[in-house]
Image 1 (cartoon, rainbow, N blue to C red):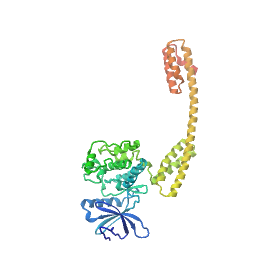
Image 2: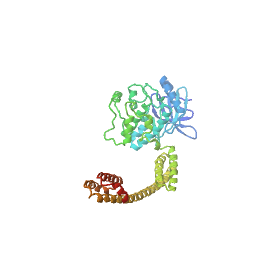
Image 3: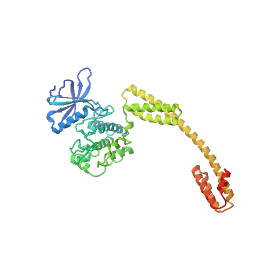
Image 4: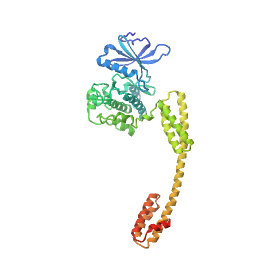
Length: 432
């Protein structure tokens, strides 16, 4: 089926292998084209059988088992696998944008909004895996591929089926991205993936991993330290981003953010990430907005238009077809214009309501003030003790706060009753 040499790529009956993309301990990855009219571009992972030991064979079989049934927009697809006397071939989806490591290095640091977009996609893939009790165990920028602006998890060579109560002790992954409990050779569980996510986010935002070191010994010493993780001096990130980073990079796995908390964290905000569902949600909300608008419920319509726009914007980012993207932009522009009109109308309605309420308050205040002065006129000459009460309360009576006026009136009334000069409450009722 295939012939191999140390210099030329192996030959497959259905594919033409071309440039070598990278290599590891057990495998080499090539860019390849499917023979025939389609000329489909794929990546072929070639694993030499002679390089496999028992553990790596089990890892390879687990990788194939996990990937062969998995279909997710943010996980690299295994299209097929083949073998011959010398090699095992994994025919993978082609990602033209290279890996995240190269992307970060080409830009040195990523803006928070870009890092957030990548994080949302990573979280989406991890949620899919978590629901199936699968842990990747080797998350790092080199194992995250890009196809346009779409991020995809790759290289499941260390992945394992792990229930929440399962624990492991075997070292897996790359030291720079390993969780402390793994580096320290303690029992660990699926939460090690969350630590790796924190390291990747840190590196994307600041251009280096939090424990960048010159040697493994130095790295191990830093990771074993009990010092809390700190962001670089002068780091300019949002409050939500800072909170998530520090909770992901918690050395104690029991205190680390949980998967449930991670998926619902405001910085991750998976509800508004660009996806195939973004447009569906946006259309549902905008139909409700139009209906409320037609019924004259401006405030409700404005709220629904704003909610719809929160999904329309991600849907534009998700759309790859240029014409559909432009059509969406035009539609969104119309909805934004209508939302601005409604905003002005609602503000006008609110001002009118405020003026009407203020007029009512003025009438009420005048009535209450008149009553107070009647009380003052009747009692100021009858008992000197009422004078001090009135002098203390006259000035605040002109407050615009009705509750203040009412409380003051109640106090004055009570003081007048204490004066034992009759029942001013009856007189108050007569004055009304």
